[in-house]
Structure formats: C-alpha cells, structure tokens
Amino acid sequence: MLDSLANLLFLLAARSGNLSIVAVIVALYPAGTVLLARGVLRERIARSQLAGLGTAATAVSLLALT
Image (cartoon, rainbow, N blue to C red; front, side, top):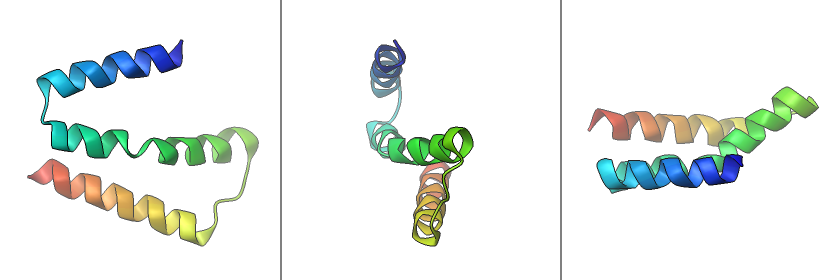
C-alpha cells in the first residue's frame, strides 16, 4: 500500500517538478530506512551513517536553493 502511494507521489512530482531535484530527493530513501530503524527498533546509528545523513541533507538543501 505505502509502496504504491510512494510510486504515485514520485510520478506526480516527476511530472510537475524539476526532475533533477526529484531524482535526488528520491535517492534519499535509504535515509528514511535508517531513521525508522533508529526510531522503531532502537538501533544505533554509526558515525559514518550520521556523516552520510548530514551530507545528504546538505546536498538536498543546496539543491533546493537553486
């Protein structure tokens, strides 16, 4: 159900938005998995994962400014 909703939202975003920005944001889906694992399963996040999350967030922020 959620996968179908995600695909529909991606299709709508790709049609109405800038595809280069949409593609980068969609590529961040592993960040959601890491954050859900932290929140639901109480898994620890390694420093390298935190660095990756921070770098990805910075990249998306910079893309949003352009």
